[in-house]
Length: 151
Image 1 (cartoon, one colour):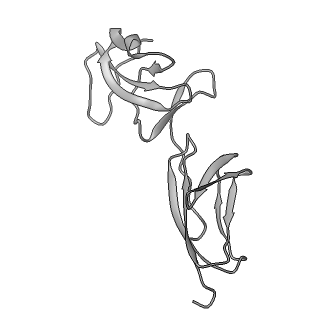
Image 2: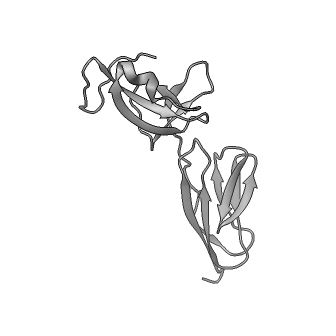
Image 3: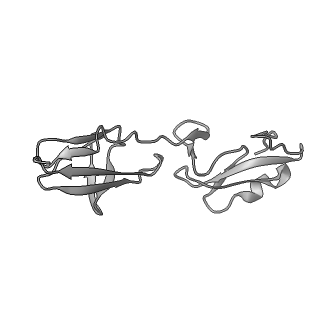
């Protein structure tokens, strides 16, 4: 692949060089850099492929769902509708927009969530730490505090 020179945030390259993003088969960007355009193909190894463009390896991913690979910004989970609930087994904190299915860690215990929604309730006062790492979504962590109904 031969790419056109890209200018990003004040970084310009000579015409003989290009920015690139190296990605794995899932679309995770492994690294980014610049190289001589003639050496672009040499950046690939194993099942890792290269795109001739600038990307942010922390914020972006390569969407492989269409005909051609496209760099997109990783979506973010918006968070729970509330982070403080009553410990009465009725009050709930709800997180919507999850990929389905996905694995959610609640205080370190893995749970599979289907349907794109997680609703937490509890019967004892406790802090629930929720961690989700569901690529291509950005990593997510939030604490829901369950308080005594008499508090």
